Amino acid sequence: MSKVERKIEQYSDIINLPRPEPRCCPRMPLEKRAAQFAPFAALTGYEEVVKETIRKHEDEIETC
Image (cartoon, rainbow, N blue to C red; front, side):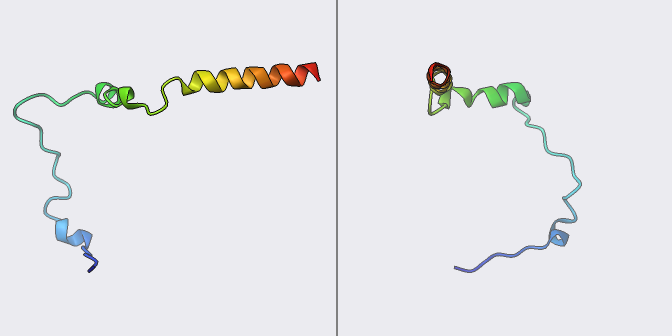
């Protein structure tokens, strides 16, 4: 495998250009873009399990 090395000078003609806007539709707002990945949370319900486990352990510590 050969390593490709590029210098920033190679991009001096485009480095300060504004990002192109799509012609077909407006850009999605950041809030919606981040929210679209929420349904893919691998551990749905994980937070609730952790909170319940903490509560149980705190109860055990208090009874000791």
